[in-house]
Image 1 (tube, rainbow, N blue to C red):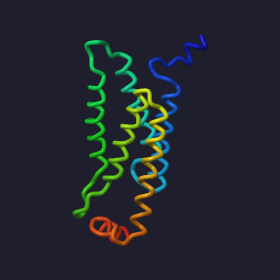
Image 2 (cartoon, helix red, strand yellow):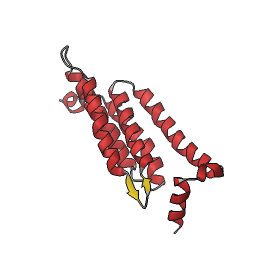
Image 3 (cartoon, rainbow, N blue to C red):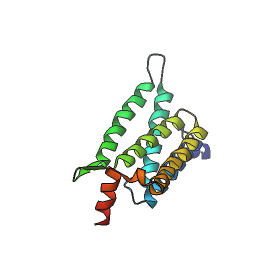
Image 4 (cartoon, one colour):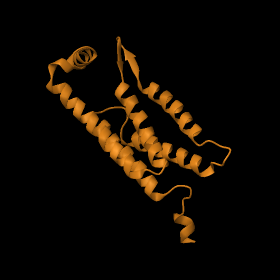
Length: 157
């Protein structure tokens, strides 16, 4: 009876924990900065992608192609990301949040394909990229031109 309660085939507790951890890793960075893709969104995007890919791999037969599910996830996540982006006064904002959703789905697909540790490494690398580029942008004035300068000026108003 207890085995029935803890058995979650075709999923694994390691996969679920990995997906939720990866979503949280990325979501914490976004939430600290007050961005639209926070901890909950990160965890849910990564976990749901893990679930879809795991189900697809579990039900695949010789005549089915589980990679089609990944293709549909890419399309759906593209629409989700587009909903995060906005155009305001000639500025497009939310592109990084949309990209964060995109990488979260890719990480979820990686975990769903059985590469748990790779997913965690990709999450850490993604946060390093987000934090590192932000530091570089703040350090070098050449990185503060164009859209970034106009957006910073608007925020100060």
